[in-house]
Length: 176
Image 1 (spheres, rainbow, N blue to C red):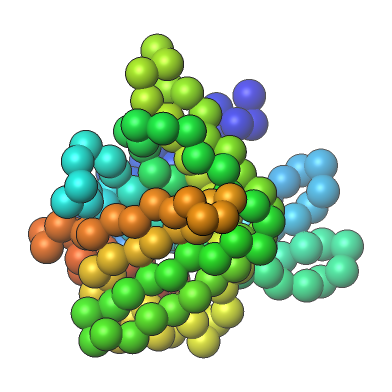
Image 2 (cartoon, one colour):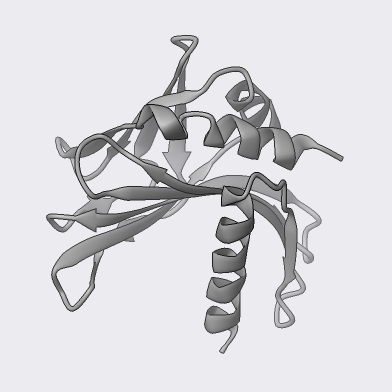
């Protein structure tokens, strides 16, 4: 049930973000007490085909230790093949100002079949620092490459119409 509620919240956030609104949400896990603050990018279309990317910036406050963990969650849908990302695998983001940002995956992830088994969907979480989130505001996202089990990787060129969504998400996330 929690998963359904969380997925519904994500859908609402995506819809609001696509309408140009800066929407932050907070989720508290009643079992662990951990608090997650997040904001979504909306769906980002890529040039290579029907794939869609959705990104979430998250701040997780761990109740037991007081630690704060930041992550960038990336979901890609409509993959034509299975794909596995190992723990500590890299993702490289290329911004319009030619800067490159390398993030490491927090955990391993495997693509799952969706749409009646016709396509694959993959969700991966990458660790990110507040400084890197600030850098995301400085240029549009032009391309990203997600490394899987070597030497495999997925590479996406973002359609021009959608390149502004990630810097807008980062600005929203950093706004007080």
